[in-house]
Image 1 (cartoon, rainbow, N blue to C red):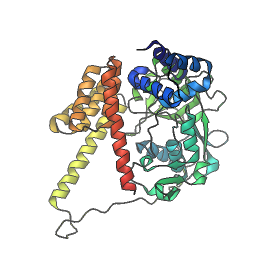
Image 2: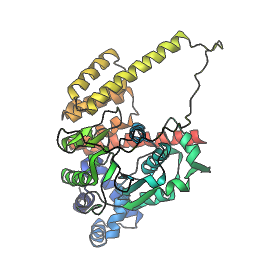
Image 3: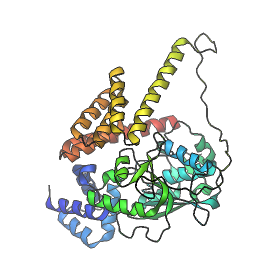
Image 4: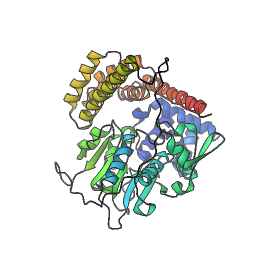
Length: 426
């Protein structure tokens, strides 16, 4: 590798804490060369000098490294858990009687805006909560503040919220001003010692899929800052591969499947004492319900084939949820046993192989994890999450070429999904 490029990568590690192998060294090198070309630079040595002397040049490069990948109500269950806690009065409100929520990295705003919509639909008024959205990318924040989104920002099964809170112009969707005004956006770097130092603690923090891209030193700094910013009994929402990391830092899993949530206990092994606010009356939100297709003979009764298919799907989801619940609770051996039994019964289902990959990775059995991920993408070649994990594992082994290949395949999946969403949105 060119010496100057290596020095630039070291600067990126120091400034934003990235682990080059997690992203792929070749991907970072490509971003460096693209940034040079975009800014009319041809000499890598002079470009290095420019970055050393000009902070703005480094900021522009960081914008090339940071690639946003988010959408409204991503993963769904974190927002369901948030709604449940609000309606049951299970949150500790501060002295100003406001629920405080932090979203970082907030990227282009889909996550904090989803939080705002959830709070409103749970019965809170704007005066009862405060939401901060923080990101290192000014470009992402500009998009968030503008509140204009493409069809790729909408990937859930229920799009009713899009009709309620957006209006369409051409092939874009503009978020209602009253929702945009509910989030406070600002730039920030989670690995800085003074990050949000003057802020009061938060009841809820969303920090998803950030830790996996940080090196060990930066990860510890980020954990220290997050631990300072979340109050005892507060809930931390994280990525499914990061649950174990927060458990090791003393957080306790929340019993809600697929929420990837943990709470900050007062002391080790102690359930926090939560001061309850009076429960908020349940507000029924109209939901889209798809009508089942009628059998070809016109009968309204389901055929036996449809009934059996429905039962099979329900049984599958129940088993998968049991596996995820055990894994989220740290019961990895139990989760692995359930998963292997499921694989034995249904060897052509790709999802249990992926879950076994996660379980193996959480147990530091990386070679075994790689095998399970490969089986998952053999059965489902466009399985984006499995491809991302294979890229990270390849980078960990030092195989940057294979890491870049898996990353390219994962990126292609996103592009294909975006194109499909755009076609469906027309």
